[in-house]
Amino acid sequence: MNLHKQTIDDITLKGQRVIIRADFNVPLDDALQITDDTRIRGTLPTINRAVDEGAKVILCSHLGRPKSKPDPKYSLAPVAKRLQRLLGKEVVFAPDCIGPGVEALVAKMKPGDVLLLENLRFHAGEEKNDDQFAKALASLGDVYINDAFGAAHRAHASIVGITKFIKTAAAGYLLKKEIEYLEGAVENPVRPFVAILGGAKVSGKIGVIENLGKRVDKVIIGGGMAFTFIKAMGYEIGNSLVENDMLDFARGIQDHAFSRGVKFYLPVDCVVAAGREPGAETKIVPIQEIPKDWYALDIGPASVKLFSEAVQNAKTILWNGPMGVFEVDAFARGTLAVAHAVANAYALTIVGGGDTALAVHRAGETDSMSFISTGGGAALELLEGKQLPGLTALPERAD
Image (cartoon, rainbow, N blue to C red; front, side):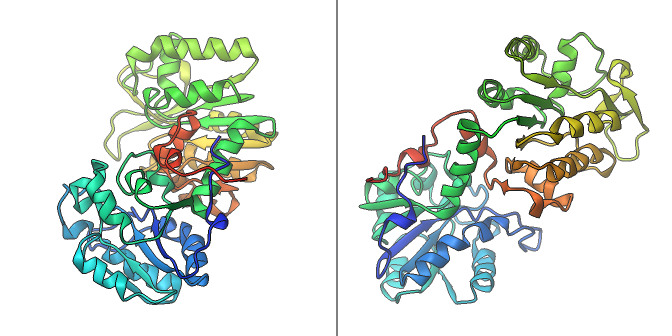
């Protein structure tokens, strides 16, 4: 259990140089404008706490996948601008994340000042978890706070290595909340506990299906991965997405669910298209009638009704993965309808980050969910019951 880690509430911040590892890996458009600042807003409680306590706040993050060298396309400059607006105070932007120039900026800081370092991944040492890079980063501060849940599953220098060179380390509010919701729900759910799993591939969710299968009362499967299960039952699925090497696994999971008394739901109808290009002919068919060369790209209205009724009496709902190719309007209805059904249930509703969070946002239901995770990969690994390197590196609370 990670619920006993030292948190920001357990340590003194006043007058300290506090390095906060945030996850500012936000989407940018071609003009380098931020299109969604959810991740930035998520770290504000931690930043504000440090500022209010009179700490010198040094923020660091990665953005995108630059090739271990500076690339203006992946600069955190737009983040500095947005942070300044959200915090209502000056945010100084450093041209690098280590080195004499940055050290000089830190030396000038006064209590309550905020400094944002340039993209950590402009240095190869970050992703290699290199000791020298971690040490150089650690030398800028007295206290380290990890609030980057979205990167907690990566053993990188700013997540793991840095904790070896700084004496005080703790989890920020966002990280703490993620653990409480994601681990808490799985370890000790209020029942009935329903998991809705979607997305393209079964293989990407094997661990989640296995771990949750032991704990849930109902499993609802949608998205591309449903067709591996449907093919495993012997039905024609046309040109729909399928993982042929996963058919036995899919059969096994279903048998396992039945033997434990877990209710297992698959789509009963789907929206099929003659091709994948926009404007291709579409129709709604029962699962048993998918035409030979067609593609199933969303769940149909009967499946929406079935799934919506299945979540109605739930007390805890965990949703990870869309129900279809929701980026295309013609195939977004199933996902949006499930978002409304989950939002309307009288349950603790937890949405696993990434595409699912985007779908909930599109459905206009963001405020109706109890908790939306900021981490795609990290959320999945936690739901699989894996230890996250970023959490393992933090000290236990001394109680």
